[in-house]
Image (cartoon, rainbow, N blue to C red; front, top):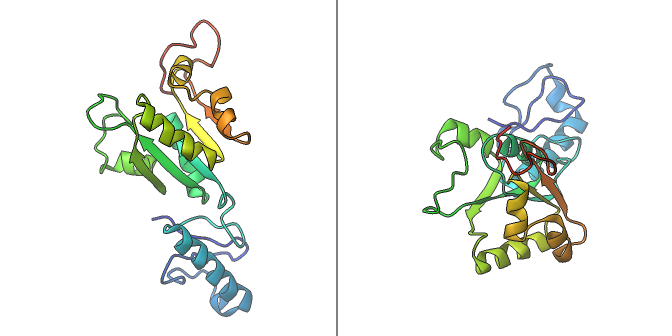
Length: 193
């Protein structure tokens, strides 16, 4: 269970609904600053529809939109950090039937998949289809970060390399994760970690 926490108040953890389900120091919940902080943190949690770590008055990545194209282990783990800190992470999954795994073959309701993709929203989109790519680029227009862990040549084939995305959104950040780097003799080799 993710829990909202306000730094500076040792031992008090907050969650939607019952914000006081764990109390460290007696009486701290009645301090006016804590009561006000509980309301702000609770509003932030409810706004996102999820539990989130809150730094002071809001989650630090509260205003970021991240498109997650990652698969396997390293990418989803990295992007999960954005989600855990309040970013609106949209996991783009491969449509069923295209024989591409979005994980390690784990059941999407299994604990590993759920852990890797917690706090993320998601839907399927075929980036090899012109309509799917058009929808993806519409999402890029209003996003801050795109994270992917394809082999370097794949993003160029799909038209989702940095130069292509920058034409859609000048401020976009492309986070690329690869097993053997973006250039060099092994760049086109697949790798998971």
